Amino acid sequence: MKKFMAMLLALVVALSMLTVAAFAESGDVEEETEDIEVTDPVDDKEEDTNPDTGVAFAVIPMVVAGAAVAFAKKH
Image 1 (tube, rainbow, N blue to C red):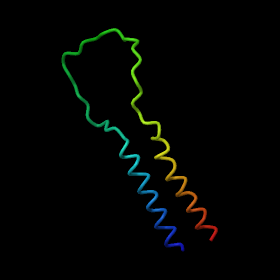
Image 2: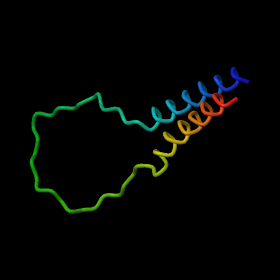
Image 3: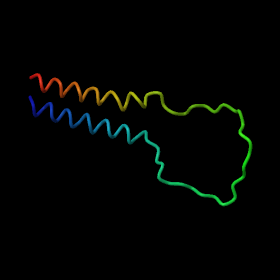
Image 4: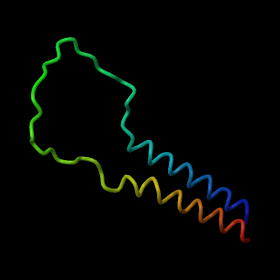
């Protein structure tokens, strides 16, 4: 039973890392342009394109992993 819980914990941790990596934006590439045009800010409201479920994909697997650890310690 403990081996099963350890495997389940490892699977949940790997799943949580994959979901976080899938929705992460790469920020290591910076584009520099020499001729930058400065303009006044516009009050146009842009649509929010971020998915609403991003936090759930990151948090739910960790909650399951915590429950698996708690269950493994009890039994």
